[in-house]
Length: 83
Image (cartoon, rainbow, N blue to C red; front, top):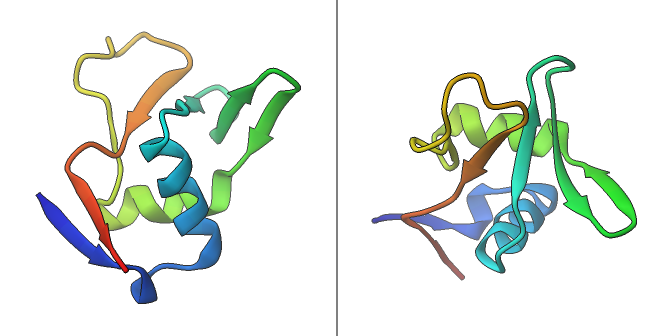
């Protein structure tokens, strides 16, 4: 399990992690290159913080998602945020 202190993350990055830990599904649309949460009101775009978290290795594309899945689900499994 990877531990990350929240002083190394921006508020937007922490919001993405908290939503994922609460069970919200972060999705990636590879046709547009955008990341978003699907909600009952539509979509909440979180491309910039999600992309930076993916680059840092904090989140990863779900290994059980087939490569042709559009949108692809991303997971924050194994990430523990230390206050």
